Structures are given as C-alpha cells and as structure tokens.
Length: 195
Image (cartoon, rainbow, N blue to C red; front, side, top):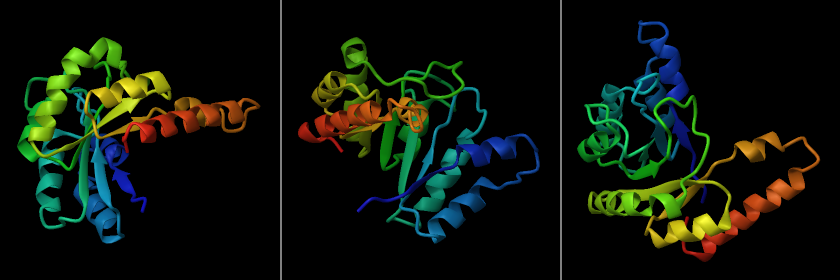
C-alpha cells in the first residue's frame, strides 16, 4: 500500500514570515496524523528558512505517541555542524527514514540527485551510521539507471527520484520520453532491491 507522508516545509515557511506561530506547524502535524497520513516529512536547512531545529524535536516527541506514523527527515548530511546540523538532528531524534539530499547550502530548492561515483566514499559511512541508529536510508537521485544501480551498492534502502524534469514535461511533446525515463529508473531501483 502507498502511504502519504505530508511535507510540512511550506507550513513552516509561512509561519516564519509572521512571527506569530501562525500557521502552527504542530497543529499541521496533528491534523495530518488525525486525517490518516502515514508519515511526516521535513527538510531542515542550514539557513532555517522553514523547518527549524525545535520543530524537528517537537515533531519527534509528538510522533512517539503515534508509533504507526513514520518520520522522514530530508537533508544534506554534510551540511551544518551546529544544533541545526542534519546529522545532529538525526542522532537526537532517530527518525524512521533519513532521505539524503545533495543540496548546497545556498540553493533555493533541491535541484539534483546524488552521483554515487563522486560521493560513495563520503556516503558509505553516513549510510552505515544511519542504519546503526535504526533509520531506513533513502537517496535523492536523478532518473539515471546507472547511478541508481551504483546507489544500491551503497546499501541504501530506497531512492527518491528528483522529479522537476517530469513535472516540466507534463504538457509538453516530450512527456512520453521523459515518462519512459522515469519508468526505467524506477524499474532499475526495483531490480536492485530498492524501494
């Protein structure tokens, strides 16, 4: 069964523009969980433009009373060493899933997947540590079957496909070719035992 994991970054982003805690991120968590969401997703960034460290801790505490709801923390494991650092937040909260994203600190939004050929030596010990913490590991990937096969060699559990090209092609003549590219990528992941 496919489960919905609600991403609360935009709720936090709007809250951060008002300084009134409106909308309330924790209220959005409660509404999502009470409506049957299978998970909550956040992507804390070093600049704290949306999800902030206290949100991560508050959500983790809330979800302790909802053991059937997954907590997914996305981010770059190599960015941030202060209290907002990705690995520090993960070590403290031990989410269900860690989705590793190769964002540079200054990017507006996630815009590319990992290249395992360039990042394997750095990713391998991070993936091992996350698994030792009891977290499932997902890598943010471009729809490139060769890179996805290499990601499987890193012992991650699943991948998340970067979908901007798919969305951009939706109403364009090349949508069939782009859809086929994503289909091949998903099949490669499945063929290598990745979710």
